Structure formats: structure tokens, C-alpha cells
Image 1 (cartoon, rainbow, N blue to C red):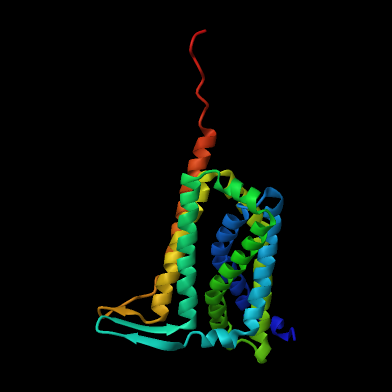
Image 2 (cartoon, rainbow, N blue to C red):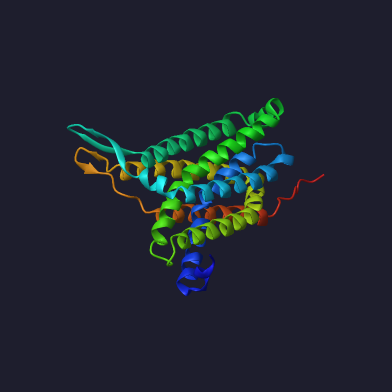
Length: 270
């Protein structure tokens, strides 16, 4: 069963897949941090770790059902008018509604944090354990949306590796397990850092708005959408990750400057 691990090509594919899962998991960590930080402090780490464990189980199940996921790429309904063309598929619908959900969730969170600063504390006091269950449901649902693209990409990368049908599946499962373990190591420190800095909370919500928009555009691209004979092209994810990395770098510099800024002394004579 593990003979495939004796092949150098398999190790290269495994390292590449693991790195890919970690990079694509950035979106997931941001969303999990947002949801977990709305819970009581005693439940935040538990929700983060349990959410990632459920995400790992869900991704492994999806890998076994990969033929079903590939079938979701095929359009089952077409919309064609004088100014619009769409080939609607299951994958496109999942990405579209996932993008809409992220836009709604992020926008409402920004509104609550700015207009109703005490909203999170009041919600925790009024809902208690229900908030924990609701948080896990949201984490699992959004991970399902993020998993579709990453799993289909992994299937394409492992195509033709190994002599047995299960070799590629084994590599993908190992990559998922390793990447989730690595994310569990860093997820809670990231969540704590975000919770300590209000500006980072707004920045992560802005990232989720950007990710939601990207999901909608990707859904349009997968549907071969055309509006007024202009086809919606793919937006390279590298642009998204560069924008996130650059914004974080600037914010880290801003936080560092505030820490190093000397506290003004009161020179007023007594």
C-alpha cells in the first residue's frame, strides 16, 4: 500500500501537495479565527482545533468521493440570451453561494464591530453553548466550499502518479493530514494575535470580502459566463495572496511602530 512512498516523484508530489494545501488553507484559518474569536475565551481554542479536525475528516471523505466532485464540474443547465451566456454547474453554484455568504458575513461583521462594539459580548452571554455549535457548523460549511477547488487541483497534480489506482489517493490523504496538523499548530497563535489587534480584525474581514469576490468570479469563469459577448476570465490566485501578504506586512510595520513609539511625557509644571 505504501510502496508509492519509495518513489522520488511521489515525495516531490507529496511536498508540493502539502504546500498547496497550507497556502489554500490561509483562507480557512482567517475565517476560523473570525468565528472562534466570537466565542467565550474558554471555547476559542477548542473551536479552532475541533473545526480543523472536522475539516480534515471532511476533506478525506471528499477525496474518496472525488469522482462525484469531478462530476460537479459538468454544466447541467444553460442560460443563453442576447446579452448573457451561462453554463451552470454544481461546482459553480457552490462557489457562487459560498462567495455570497462570505460577502454577507464579512460586511455584517464589519458593521457590528464599528456600529455595535459590544455586540459580540452580548451575543455570547445570550446564546451560550448554541454559539459554539453554530460556529462549528459555519466552519465546516466554509471549509467545504474552500475544499472543492483545492481537492480538484490536487487530483490534477497527482494524475498519473503510481502504478495502482489508490496511490494518488494515498498521497492526497497524507498531504491533507500533514497540512491540517501544521495549520493546527499556527491557527491559535494567529487567532490570538488577531483578537489582540482591532485593526487586524478589520483587515481579516476585508480579506474575506476579497476572497468572497474571488469565489464569485471563479464561479463565473467555471460557468464560461459571457456578458455582452465578453467572457469572464480567471483571476490568478497569486494576486490574491500577494495582496494579503502585502497588507499584512504593512499592518505589522504599523503595529511595530506603535509599540516603539515613545509615550509622551507630561512636562507641565506642577
